[in-house]
Length: 241
Ligand SMILES: O=C(O)[C@H](O)[C@@H](O)[C@H](O)[C@H](O)COP(=O)(O)O
Image (cartoon, rainbow, N blue to C red; front, top):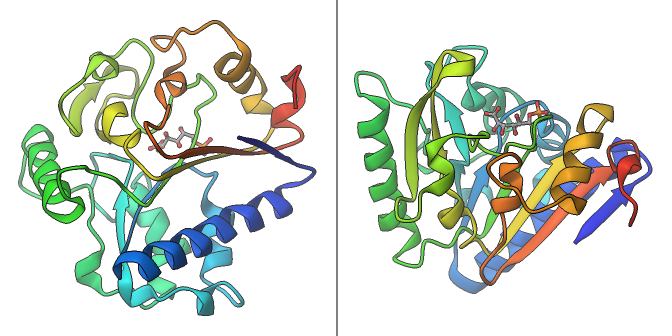
Protein backbone atom coordinates (compact mmCIF):
# COMPACT_ATOMS: atom_id res chain seq x y z
CA UNK A 1 0.00 0.00 0.00
CA UNK A 2 1.31 3.43 -0.92
CA UNK A 3 1.10 6.09 1.81
CA UNK A 4 2.01 9.62 0.74
CA UNK A 5 2.82 12.13 3.48
CA UNK A 6 2.88 15.89 2.99
CA UNK A 7 6.19 16.10 4.82
CA UNK A 8 8.95 13.89 6.19
CA UNK A 9 7.98 14.62 9.80
CA UNK A 10 4.64 12.84 9.33
CA UNK A 11 6.33 10.11 7.27
CA UNK A 12 8.86 9.37 9.99
CA UNK A 13 6.16 9.31 12.68
CA UNK A 14 4.37 6.69 10.58
CA UNK A 15 7.58 4.67 10.23
CA UNK A 16 8.13 4.75 13.99
CA UNK A 17 4.50 3.83 14.65
CA UNK A 18 4.86 0.77 12.38
CA UNK A 19 7.78 -0.39 14.54
CA UNK A 20 5.78 0.07 17.76
CA UNK A 21 2.65 -1.62 16.39
CA UNK A 22 4.53 -4.54 14.80
CA UNK A 23 6.57 -5.07 17.95
CA UNK A 24 3.43 -5.14 20.15
CA UNK A 25 1.68 -7.56 17.80
CA UNK A 26 4.66 -9.93 17.60
CA UNK A 27 5.49 -9.82 21.32
CA UNK A 28 1.83 -10.33 22.30
CA UNK A 29 1.67 -13.31 19.92
CA UNK A 30 5.02 -15.04 20.53
CA UNK A 31 7.04 -13.09 23.08
CA UNK A 32 9.62 -11.78 20.61
CA UNK A 33 10.01 -9.28 17.75
CA UNK A 34 12.42 -9.95 14.87
CA UNK A 35 13.04 -6.82 12.82
CA UNK A 36 15.53 -6.13 10.02
CA UNK A 37 16.73 -2.53 9.71
CA UNK A 38 17.76 -0.82 6.51
CA UNK A 39 20.90 1.13 5.90
CA UNK A 40 21.33 4.40 4.06
CA UNK A 41 20.17 7.81 5.25
CA UNK A 42 16.38 7.45 5.02
CA UNK A 43 15.86 5.65 8.36
CA UNK A 44 17.88 8.10 10.48
CA UNK A 45 14.98 10.30 11.49
CA UNK A 46 12.58 7.55 12.51
CA UNK A 47 15.36 5.73 14.34
CA UNK A 48 15.85 8.89 16.43
CA UNK A 49 12.09 9.13 17.05
CA UNK A 50 12.04 5.54 18.33
CA UNK A 51 14.87 6.36 20.72
CA UNK A 52 12.86 9.17 22.32
CA UNK A 53 9.60 9.62 24.17
CA UNK A 54 6.80 8.70 23.52
CA UNK A 55 7.87 5.80 21.29
CA UNK A 56 10.77 4.57 23.41
CA UNK A 57 8.48 3.70 26.30
CA UNK A 58 6.05 1.85 24.06
CA UNK A 59 8.44 -0.94 23.04
CA UNK A 60 9.47 -3.92 25.19
CA UNK A 61 13.08 -3.56 24.00
CA UNK A 62 14.25 -6.61 25.98
CA UNK A 63 12.11 -8.76 23.63
CA UNK A 64 13.41 -7.17 20.41
CA UNK A 65 15.98 -8.82 18.14
CA UNK A 66 17.72 -6.61 15.58
CA UNK A 67 19.00 -7.79 12.20
CA UNK A 68 19.83 -5.97 8.97
CA UNK A 69 18.48 -6.21 5.44
CA UNK A 70 21.99 -5.62 4.17
CA UNK A 71 25.39 -4.30 5.11
CA UNK A 72 28.47 -2.88 3.55
CA UNK A 73 31.39 -5.22 4.31
CA UNK A 74 33.27 -2.71 6.48
CA UNK A 75 34.14 -2.71 10.20
CA UNK A 76 31.44 -1.62 12.61
CA UNK A 77 33.27 1.66 13.32
CA UNK A 78 33.45 2.62 9.65
CA UNK A 79 31.26 5.57 8.67
CA UNK A 80 29.90 3.49 5.78
CA UNK A 81 28.59 0.82 8.17
CA UNK A 82 24.81 0.49 8.39
CA UNK A 83 25.29 -0.93 11.88
CA UNK A 84 27.23 2.18 12.96
CA UNK A 85 24.40 4.40 11.80
CA UNK A 86 21.83 2.25 13.63
CA UNK A 87 23.95 2.23 16.81
CA UNK A 88 24.29 6.02 16.75
CA UNK A 89 20.65 6.80 15.93
CA UNK A 90 18.80 4.07 17.86
CA UNK A 91 20.52 1.03 19.36
CA UNK A 92 22.82 2.83 21.81
CA UNK A 93 19.79 4.72 23.18
CA UNK A 94 17.44 1.83 23.96
CA UNK A 95 17.81 -1.17 26.31
CA UNK A 96 18.09 -3.98 23.76
CA UNK A 97 20.24 -6.80 25.16
CA UNK A 98 23.52 -6.73 23.23
CA UNK A 99 23.20 -10.45 22.44
CA UNK A 100 19.97 -9.67 20.59
CA UNK A 101 21.70 -7.40 18.05
CA UNK A 102 22.92 -9.52 15.15
CA UNK A 103 25.43 -7.48 13.15
CA UNK A 104 25.74 -8.43 9.51
CA UNK A 105 29.53 -8.06 9.64
CA UNK A 106 32.24 -9.86 11.60
CA UNK A 107 36.05 -9.62 11.69
CA UNK A 108 38.42 -12.27 10.35
CA UNK A 109 35.89 -14.01 8.11
CA UNK A 110 35.25 -13.84 4.37
CA UNK A 111 31.94 -12.19 3.44
CA UNK A 112 30.71 -15.22 1.54
CA UNK A 113 31.41 -17.44 4.57
CA UNK A 114 29.73 -15.00 6.90
CA UNK A 115 26.66 -14.91 4.65
CA UNK A 116 26.31 -18.66 5.24
CA UNK A 117 26.77 -18.16 8.98
CA UNK A 118 24.16 -15.39 9.06
CA UNK A 119 21.77 -17.58 7.10
CA UNK A 120 22.18 -20.37 9.67
CA UNK A 121 21.56 -17.83 12.44
CA UNK A 122 18.33 -16.78 10.72
CA UNK A 123 17.25 -20.41 10.28
CA UNK A 124 17.85 -20.93 14.01
CA UNK A 125 16.16 -17.72 15.13
CA UNK A 126 13.30 -17.33 12.65
CA UNK A 127 12.54 -21.01 12.12
CA UNK A 128 12.16 -22.85 8.81
CA UNK A 129 9.58 -20.41 7.49
CA UNK A 130 12.13 -17.58 7.77
CA UNK A 131 9.50 -14.94 8.41
CA UNK A 132 10.69 -11.64 9.83
CA UNK A 133 8.01 -9.75 11.75
CA UNK A 134 9.08 -6.51 10.06
CA UNK A 135 11.66 -5.53 7.45
CA UNK A 136 12.46 -1.90 6.66
CA UNK A 137 13.82 -1.17 3.20
CA UNK A 138 15.20 1.90 1.51
CA UNK A 139 15.24 2.49 -2.23
CA UNK A 140 18.27 3.71 -4.09
CA UNK A 141 17.98 6.44 -6.71
CA UNK A 142 18.56 3.60 -9.21
CA UNK A 143 15.74 1.48 -7.79
CA UNK A 144 17.90 -0.95 -5.82
CA UNK A 145 16.90 -2.09 -2.36
CA UNK A 146 18.91 -3.72 0.41
CA UNK A 147 22.02 -4.72 -1.55
CA UNK A 148 19.98 -6.02 -4.49
CA UNK A 149 21.59 -3.89 -7.18
CA UNK A 150 20.68 -3.71 -10.88
CA UNK A 151 22.25 -6.39 -13.05
CA UNK A 152 23.78 -8.34 -10.17
CA UNK A 153 23.55 -12.15 -9.99
CA UNK A 154 21.99 -11.98 -6.53
CA UNK A 155 18.75 -10.79 -8.16
CA UNK A 156 18.22 -14.30 -9.52
CA UNK A 157 18.96 -16.09 -6.23
CA UNK A 158 16.09 -18.42 -5.43
CA UNK A 159 17.42 -20.62 -2.62
CA UNK A 160 19.85 -18.72 -0.41
CA UNK A 161 18.45 -16.50 2.31
CA UNK A 162 21.65 -14.44 2.58
CA UNK A 163 24.26 -13.72 -0.06
CA UNK A 164 27.49 -11.73 -0.30
CA UNK A 165 29.29 -10.48 -3.39
CA UNK A 166 31.74 -7.88 -4.65
CA UNK A 167 29.82 -4.82 -5.89
CA UNK A 168 32.23 -3.51 -8.49
CA UNK A 169 30.66 -0.06 -9.00
CA UNK A 170 31.19 0.67 -5.30
CA UNK A 171 34.47 -1.25 -5.01
CA UNK A 172 33.23 -3.03 -1.91
CA UNK A 173 31.70 -6.29 -0.77
CA UNK A 174 28.03 -6.27 0.16
CA UNK A 175 26.07 -8.79 2.21
CA UNK A 176 22.31 -8.89 1.81
CA UNK A 177 19.08 -10.73 2.50
CA UNK A 178 17.82 -12.15 -0.78
CA UNK A 179 14.45 -11.28 -2.28
CA UNK A 180 12.94 -14.71 -1.50
CA UNK A 181 13.73 -14.26 2.21
CA UNK A 182 12.58 -10.64 2.34
CA UNK A 183 9.29 -11.71 0.74
CA UNK A 184 8.61 -14.15 3.58
CA UNK A 185 8.23 -11.23 6.02
CA UNK A 186 4.93 -10.51 7.76
CA UNK A 187 5.40 -6.81 7.01
CA UNK A 188 7.75 -4.90 4.71
CA UNK A 189 8.00 -1.11 4.89
CA UNK A 190 9.83 0.95 2.28
CA UNK A 191 10.82 4.36 3.61
CA UNK A 192 11.95 6.94 1.05
CA UNK A 193 11.65 10.64 0.48
CA UNK A 194 12.93 13.51 -1.61
CA UNK A 195 13.35 14.46 -5.25
CA UNK A 196 16.15 11.93 -5.90
CA UNK A 197 13.58 9.13 -5.53
CA UNK A 198 10.98 10.51 -7.96
CA UNK A 199 12.18 8.59 -11.02
CA UNK A 200 12.92 5.29 -9.27
CA UNK A 201 9.60 5.25 -7.40
CA UNK A 202 7.66 5.93 -10.59
CA UNK A 203 9.51 3.16 -12.47
CA UNK A 204 9.22 0.67 -9.61
CA UNK A 205 5.50 1.23 -9.03
CA UNK A 206 4.23 2.25 -12.45
CA UNK A 207 6.87 1.23 -14.97
CA UNK A 208 7.14 -2.05 -16.89
CA UNK A 209 8.14 -5.05 -14.77
CA UNK A 210 11.92 -5.04 -15.14
CA UNK A 211 13.51 -6.15 -11.85
CA UNK A 212 16.95 -6.55 -13.44
CA UNK A 213 16.92 -2.79 -13.83
CA UNK A 214 14.66 -1.91 -10.87
CA UNK A 215 15.32 -4.59 -8.22
CA UNK A 216 12.80 -3.07 -5.76
CA UNK A 217 10.18 -4.67 -8.04
CA UNK A 218 11.31 -8.06 -6.69
CA UNK A 219 9.78 -7.18 -3.31
CA UNK A 220 6.37 -8.85 -3.24
CA UNK A 221 5.51 -10.41 0.14
CA UNK A 222 4.21 -13.99 -0.16
CA UNK A 223 1.65 -13.55 2.62
CA UNK A 224 2.65 -10.35 4.38
CA UNK A 225 1.92 -6.68 3.96
CA UNK A 226 3.93 -4.26 1.81
CA UNK A 227 3.86 -0.55 2.54
CA UNK A 228 5.56 2.34 0.79
CA UNK A 229 5.95 5.31 3.14
CA UNK A 230 6.89 8.23 0.93
CA UNK A 231 6.70 12.01 1.04
CA UNK A 232 4.85 14.13 -1.55
CA UNK A 233 8.09 15.05 -3.29
CA UNK A 234 9.16 11.46 -3.95
CA UNK A 235 5.58 10.66 -5.02
CA UNK A 236 5.32 13.64 -7.39
CA UNK A 237 6.16 11.47 -10.41
CA UNK A 238 3.33 9.03 -9.80
CA UNK A 239 0.16 9.18 -11.88
CA UNK A 240 -1.83 7.36 -9.18
CA UNK A 241 -1.51 8.40 -5.52
O1 LIG B 1 23.30 -0.27 2.45
C1 LIG B 1 22.57 0.52 1.86
O2 LIG B 1 22.97 1.49 1.20
C2 LIG B 1 21.09 0.38 1.97
O3 LIG B 1 20.60 -0.60 2.62
C3 LIG B 1 20.46 0.71 0.67
O4 LIG B 1 19.66 -0.25 0.10
C4 LIG B 1 19.70 1.98 0.92
O5 LIG B 1 18.50 1.68 1.61
C5 LIG B 1 19.42 2.69 -0.35
O6 LIG B 1 20.63 2.88 -1.04
C6 LIG B 1 18.75 4.05 -0.08
O7 LIG B 1 19.68 4.84 0.60
P1 LIG B 1 19.23 6.29 1.15
O8 LIG B 1 18.22 6.04 2.22
O9 LIG B 1 20.51 6.88 1.69
O10 LIG B 1 18.67 7.04 -0.02
